[in-house]
Image 1: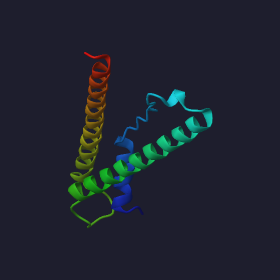
Image 2 (image 1 turned 180 degrees about the horizontal axis):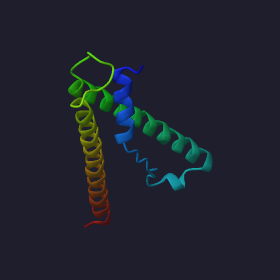
Image 3 (image 1 turned 60 degrees about the vertical axis):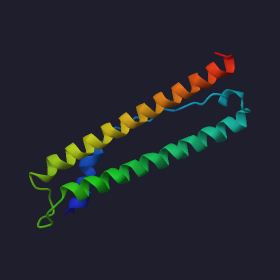
Image 4 (image 1 turned 90 degrees about the vertical axis):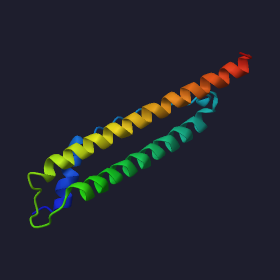
Length: 119
């Protein structure tokens, strides 16, 4: 029989959407080929670490907020929708923060380019 935590983890895996986009930074194309490979490997490792951290935080937060009873090994009828809604809200919030961060970076890059061009 499965524990409540393993049931929660399974449900969160269904809700979680993984959108892993490979980000390239300006100047990467100017690196020698062997350094490009190392750079991309480092970026992939950082993305994997960030994804795992986000997933672990999601599981911990939703489990702590939604699982209130340990009388049975399965989730009750109130815990299941709570877990699903919690995970959905967390993923949406994380995506929104990522989007805002990208927008801020784009604005800063534009300002830097404008300053460099003398505007």
